[in-house]
Image (cartoon, rainbow, N blue to C red):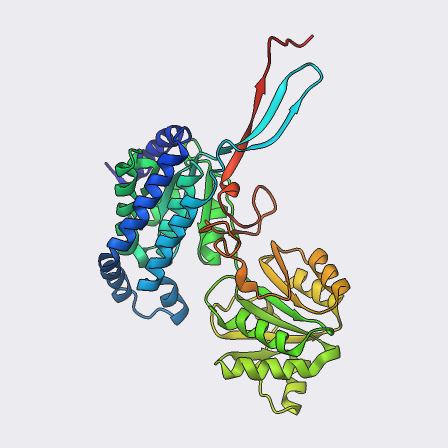
Length: 419
């Protein structure tokens, strides 16, 4: 069987298994998930060994990329916990979204149903294999996983654990399949199989996501990049402003919800210097536009120049760009012009300004007095997420179980006919 035939066969099997999985009981799906969590914990040493193969073969990668690729005992435990949390969540399949009785006696129910077959194309993060498999399984969807070459060994081993768990729970092992090659031709074939696949979710760098969008005949849910902003309002508390800015940038700088831009109201210019000092002390390369650099230099803080392009850059590292703005309206306008619509925050004690910001900023997640680092399915109580969507149709923000469902109408009658 050649490569194209292999991928087509995977898609056909996924379609067949999706139709069976849609009717599986909640208990059976939860059983598979709990078995998987146990297998992950019991296989920690083997997972780390396979991950070491990937790390050893990924010479010359950036520290941010290496961080995304690395599996530690703590991260493996977190994967297992994420699976158990998904198992503990209510099953969305069959949930009645709306119900009404028409004047003619027809009862109409709008109910959640699985999307069907979801293909996930992703890079570097091997935990995505488990997160996506678990969420798709619980929501009744068959999944096709296509990871990057840098995590091939980790992904293949983890996918094997998923199949083992499915079969032990009495489910079709083809409910979750992994494309067993990193050949780009396999992805090209996958993106054209709209007869069998209902949705594509790409997770990775902007170039990968744009390639998927440009070449897919299947609907795509995506976000291109995470250019997140923290705006320090004129009514902000300094201590809160420093803590949120430092956390948003430094807690995990490689994450897509880490802050890349810092905006400070010109009414509280000293806040810029204090935040800059705190970030620089944490090893952050602090960049600023001409006005902010001049002010910082006069107050004993050296900043590197920030270009217009820098304010649209997802650094994924300890770098941040900063500038002064005239107030909350200018901050919102700047964010809407330069951010990626992912996650943006205002730090303020003024409810009026915060409300304006929350309504005016056109992003999937907007925060008031909290770090952008909370844009995450686990932190939102959704369980492990399948990704963050900056689209506006079907799903937006962290995608949990409900976002992996479509719906159908069930109509109950007692002989009604239309005149």
